[in-house]
Structures are given as C-alpha cells and as structure tokens.
Length: 570
Ligand code: C2E
Ligand code: MG
Ligand code: MG
Image 1 (cartoon, rainbow, N blue to C red):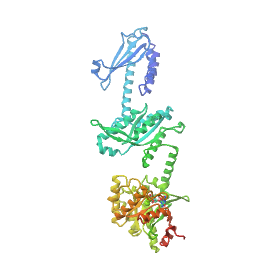
Image 2: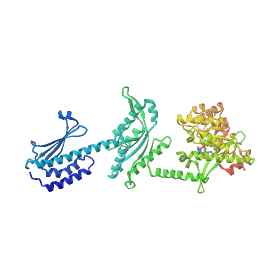
Image 3: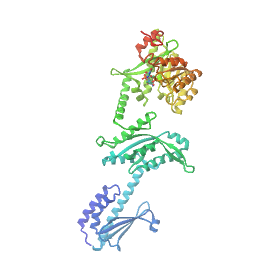
Image 4: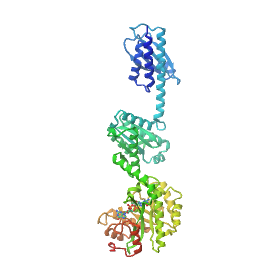
C-alpha cells in the first residue's frame, strides 16, 4: 500500500494536537480527531476490547467498544495489538483494513503501531484523569459527591447559559449530633449518607448533591424538582438498622437560590455566595427551616455588614447611650428599679436595639457592647451617689453570647468595683438558654454572680423554650414575665393566657422569686397584675426608656411620679 508520507505526518500532528487538549472520553469528539488518520491508513473498522485482568482475558469476558466502522472491512486479517496497563488491565486494539484497498506492508504496519501507541497512551491518560476526578469530586466518607463537584456543575450550567432552569440549595442537617448520640457514630454516618443519596436519587439528571463538610451540603437541581427537595429536607425517615427497619427522622435547615436573571451573574462564585448567604440567614433566624435568596435579603445583609463595620468606631465615639426605663411598685407607685436599655445615636437618629443587637449577637461584638453598657451604668450610679442622689437598682442585659466566657463574672465584678458601686445596686438580666451546654454555663454564671451579691433575673420568661427546669435548677432572684402574657385588649380574665399568668405569678411567689411584668401599657394590665398579686411593673403605661437627664428627674422625685393613671401630671 502506498501511504502519502507527507499527508500522514500532517494528520499525525493534528491528531496529537487534538488528543492532547482532550480531557475526557467524548466519543464523537474522539472520533472526529481519529477519523482523518484512520482514513489515511485505510482502516475500515477500529475497535478494542477491555479486560480488567488476565483471567478475564483468558475467559474472553471483556468489554468491547467499536469506535469506527466505514467502508468494507476485511475481517480476516486485522492488525491486532495487545497492551497492558500498569494496574494489570488489558486492552486489545484491532484495526481492519479496507477490503477495496491494497494490503498493509511493513511500513504501513509500523505507522499503525505508532497510532495504536498514541491511542493507548491517550486511554491511559483519560483513565488517570477519571481517577483524579473521582478523587477530587467524591466524599469518600459518605460515598457521595463533594462541593467541588457541585461548583463545577454550576459553573458548567452557567457557562452554557442554562443556569436559570436550575436551583441551588445549601443545607445543614438539624440536630445531627443528637442523631449520632441516638444511633451511634457509625450508623449516624450511614444515615447521613442515605439521606443525601436518597435525595439525589429523586432528582432528574444532572441534579446532584455534594457534601461541603460536616453536616453541610450543597446541591443543584432542576427547578421542576424544587418541591421534591423541599419535601425531602423538611423531614424524611431514614433506616438506620437494616435488621429491624428502625428509622430516624432527618431534616435540614436550607437556603435556596433560584437564579432568574442571567445578566446578574458574572461568576460561579455569585451562585455559591447567594445560596450560602440564604442558608446562613436561615440558620440564624430562630424557627426557620428555609430561606430563599432575594435582593431584599441581600440588602438586609449589606446593612448588617455596615453595622458590623461601623460598630467599633461608634463604640469609641460613645455613640451608644444608656436609656433607663423605670420599674414601678404598683402598691405605692414608687420607682422600684430601672432597666438599662441601649440606644445608638447615629447621625442624629436614635436607633432601637432591634436594629443592631441581633446583628451584634452574631459575633462577639455584643459582648463589647454589654460591657460598655455596664461600665456606663456603673459610672452613672457612682455619679448619682456622689451627687447625693438615691439611685435604685439598675438591671443590665447580658447576651447569651457571654456564657461560654469563663472569666465573665470576674470581668463584671471588675467593672463594678472599679467604679466603687455597691453590688446591691446592680442586677443582671439573662434570657433562657436553648442547649444543655448553655444551661450548665448559665447555672455557673448565675450562682457566681449571686456569691458576689449581684441580683440575677430571667428576662422574657414565657417566650421561646422556657422550661420549668430553668427556674427549678437555677436560683434566680427575679422572674421578668414577658409581655406576651398580657392580654392585648381588655379580654376576659379566663382566657388561657390569663390562667397561665395567674399560675406563673403564683409559682414565682411560692418559689420566693421577685416577679415583674414587662410591657405594661394600660390600666387594665395594672389591674390584672394587682388581681394576680404581681406588684412590680415596667412599661409604657408608666414610662418609656428615658435618656439619662430625664431619668435623673425621676430619681430626684422618686415618690410622686406615678399613680393609678400611670404618670402624675408634672
Ligand atoms: P428587653 O430586655 O426585654 O427589654 C424590654 C423591651 O421592651 C425594651 O425594648 C423596651 O423598650 C420595651 N418595652 C418597655 N415597655 C414596653 C411596653 O409597654 N410595650 C412594649 N411594646 N414594649 C415595651 P428595647 O429597648 O427596644 O430593647 C429590645 C431588646 O433589646 C431588649 O429586650 C433586650 O433584649 C435587648 N437589649 C437592649 N439593650 C441591650 C443591651 O445593652 N445589651 C443586650 N445584650 N441586649 C439589649
Ligand atoms: Mg431586659
Ligand atoms: Mg424583656
């Protein structure tokens, strides 16, 4: 056979170049690259058989792939070459000449041999890439995909401009440490793996779920599968014991992003940023299982970032002010105490705590603010004492964020003593806890404060997860009942709310706890309190939180400030 050597060299160059840039075995593409060479060599059929090992080869149980078949192959005299991979698997390549063309001579076979070697090395490279990819994109502990896989998938969909047909989800399994405790670590891992694999199994291709780490996952799914994802994540029973079929309910807190406008998305990181932002918000917001990304959410986040950024300077510039809200004894209408509440005076505007405390609570910044407040309250009390005024006990709010701090009480006492403030003039308000660890910390802090003669109160009692344990196990001085106990308008005294109120007040009294009602706004509220023998009240009916100079006026009067009608005419 006469093969044009120049043509052969040119086609060989092109083939090498084509294969070099190829990273995966994309059949039509590979065929396009090889076809010119197979034509030059007058090959009519090209195929190979893969044997995983020599035994399979002896048993002839291999996997055959036919890549190319054009013209009329001479099936009797193929050029066959056997190759062995380093791992022991075997490839048998077979080239069949075109029956209508002249037979291959020695030189032709030499060229065929070269081409076969090139294809074999390409095969090896693809296998290596596949192996590396598998290593790169798999979570081997759970035998699921990982985050890199999902990021690559999202990037591909973005590149192909198909991303708006898909949604992204990021989720964190709820209370998984409890699942581990219940079923054991090993079964826990299996449960986690099954939960994720089952979800992926419900998705239409190429939908997939990958592990980010720990019990955090990210996924891409077709928008038409959104309800499937939401239902699965809202709670699915997963078998953890195959013998008994026992199941555990697994649910997740999730953030979703459903891209709608391709122009908004520049980079795959935008996708990840948005979906992780949504899940982070969902995790922070109490009682929320899912949050969808939106522009409004983004704006809120930006505002929160701004607050975090501005906070340190604002603290240095003393922009945070202590407001005092009097607590009133409703048997004689005297001022029995006050609560210190924070206000941020920013650019002439007074910001309420709701606008910044939740943000500061997401970091340890809240602790800096609380110490700042305590310091300023102590300064004020010291000044009032020095001026011959008669200050009443002031309560200061302390975030739960402090509880893990082993030096907290020392720090508090240090601030109080540095200002020479008698301990009985201070009270620390703490809210109930949600975890056992926090509960233990809370108990330690409250006991320690009391050893130093500082009063402690449970704030907002009756909201969230108030448990009787909280007041049974920890010896508080004061129970501050949340305004949720009060009827909104003049309701009947026999609503379930009022029954609760009556019993909680009685319970506090029997346990020797001082009891105060927050959010007292009307005369009916005051009457209800008297009827139920709760004699301390705080609320707008008497006074709003007051700036220090206003509060000082109350301090100076102390007696004739309040009456049945709330405030006396001044
Ligand atoms: P809180 O400790 O339960 O404070 C009582 C809140 O109820 C105050 O809101 C107060 O202004 C409001 N309030 C008082 N009387 C009435 C009433 O009659 N009706 C109604 N509807 N509300 C009334 P404020 O000042 O906006 O503070 C909100 C929360 O922010 C506080 O709730 C407290 O949890 C937190 N906070 C305020 N200052 C600080 C602080 O310095 N440190 C920490 N960690 N938290 C603070
Ligand atoms: Mg409070
Ligand atoms: Mg409160």
